Picture 1: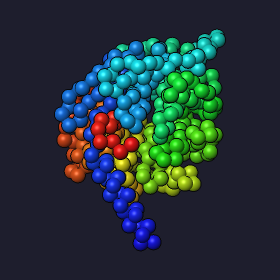
Picture 2 (picture 1 turned 90 degrees about the vertical axis):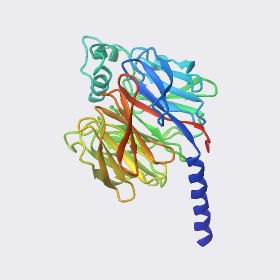
Picture 3 (picture 1 turned 180 degrees about the vertical axis):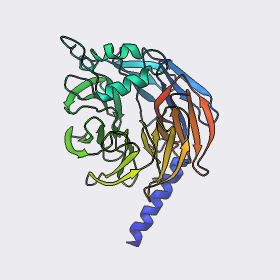
Picture 4 (picture 1 turned 120 degrees about the horizontal axis):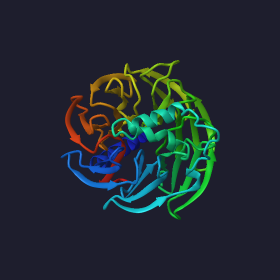
Length: 372
């Protein structure tokens, strides 16, 4: 037992040293200026910019930091592949699977997930009027996530005739298959480090689909109230889910799932209101849940599962992103066109960096010292 504990302690120390050595940038997706940015969070300098054919919504970044996949769900209905060192286009993922059969005899009302997507996309740039028309023809290739070895990219098609996931082989550059999931309201998903289990919240159905990406088989469908949409992973195997709120559960809920059993072990009321996303720090100490209505981020003690501090940020806070060394939290503010930097020692906003017009999504890019 002592030998096991000593070995585990050595592993933790090694991991801590490796993470602390990682330099990083923040990849920022700004909707209405159709741009993908690379931001240096230490200086606030924009290092690179890529002009997309339409609004970029979600990003997946390879573990080596060399490739960025950015989904363009509306109008263009494709996924851009960028060289992260130059921000030049390496290719595009296009498919008939990203298209939807146009309705006959009139326009159907959008689902809550579609309406939310349209509201965010058109909230500041006057482009919202075209959203309903675009939803008639696009399957909305929106969520994107890479397996741990980077060999597969999964792309969510939430507005398809039959909603599901598209599997793309990154080595061959070919789409392999479509996986039908049937449930409505899937918007964002992530793949768990180590296990390669994909967790796909469906906020319209109040359920989370768990997919084994090694077999592409559904392992479980977990009931989760509160309009589940955001996903974060803790190093102890917990899966943290942000809830956008619904009539039954109300706003501000965070749900914690044990990935060993895929059972809900805790629900936490953060007190926040409105749509947002979820993240967990790499050291497993903190979780963060943003709220677009109350304009804040709830920072949660992940061990106690209690809100440690609620920090006011900008208008329309979207993705929270922890720095690799778990000392900083970055929050996208779509309503203010900036990114807030929060020092986790003081729980205070220490800097605000202007980026694009309405940044909502993004990710962390490791630029050097990677342990992967």
